[in-house]
Picture (cartoon, rainbow, N blue to C red):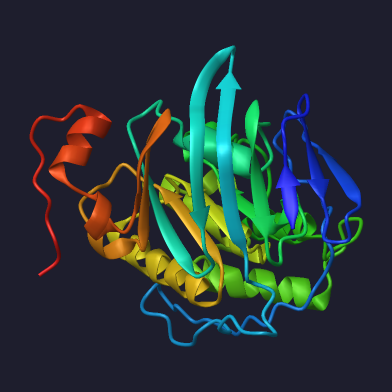
Length: 308
């Protein structure tokens, strides 16, 4: 069990053995390699040119490391002296894909950065139960416009950073298994053929796919994607969603912030609807309604469409 509490810019963590453990988070939002290595039980997944998944990840079972449970209790977060999130309470079970919706400025990015350990809560707590061992077990993909891509790194280099975060690599050395994991993750998002390309030469959508591959390379139990599909073409988007669904089947938690409300009924197991406060949380059938949209966004007219 890991608990994160307010502590002057540091997150205090209690590991399963009861010992304290603290992370320092730099202004560069870098994730420090602080977690233990463990066998993952992940099987090969082939998406080819981002078509359907041809082989599944290993399912969650007694031997699987992925059995996270996330509990948010009375969580409040402030930025610049202003409360951005206030009194959030919800729980997320493993094998769950969560759609996080709400207006711009409603706190979606703040929530993800708090869960990732980048921002400290000012009140309340975050409790990770299950296999999580620290910050490195949460993979976070931020919005593309918040990232600086003006550096001479290749696609392979960027995805390899997920292995350093994971703690499986030491002093920058990639082992055989690390390199194989990078190759597999790039194949999964259809970017293996561009592995030697500089990220400066990629389109916005291709860069997002590289970021998702880096998150997958961490082998994290919780994957947070902050509008990570923005700019990704339709064909690639569907393939990535299939891949994320397969991650859930393996026992992970996937949380995806989105402004696209067209297919939320079919894409997600649950919806987390926030605008500073928690407006609704539950299955799309229970929560997604014109009344909710009016309350959440101030929209007067909204028609819910379902797949035929």
